[in-house]
Amino acid sequence: MGFHFGGEVGLAARFGDGSSAEIWAGPSLRFDGIDIGPAKISAGLTVGFSYVTDTIGRERDAEIDNNGDATLLYYAGPEIAVAFDAVPDTEFVVQTHHRSGALHVPWLPTINNMPNTSNANTFGVRKRF
Image 1 (spheres, rainbow, N blue to C red):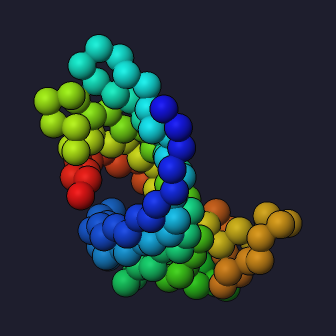
Image 2: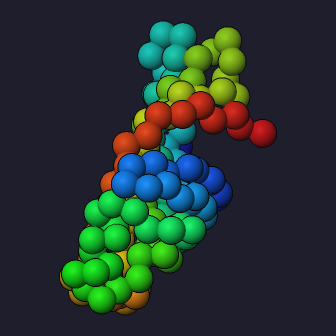
């Protein structure tokens, strides 16, 4: 049981008041997990950058309100994952995708004059290789 560093790259389709594509990437820190019966529960955090092909919904509103651009923003993705002993390289993951320009975060340089813009709670399956 311990921690390890890695990296994450992701691609998603976004839907709501319109649609767009998103790609994100960054380094990650993961807690290897705790065994509970035939399952292992782990946690992780990825931080980096997120790029979208078009802004929609709350992000578009924030662009207008702040005279900003939410195309490229900071990304943070805290997660919880569950893997089963029968298929240890496959994980079921719940993650929050948070995009922000860090307008009111004093220790981070602001990107594109944008505040916190959006969160998306996601569920997925990850294959480790």
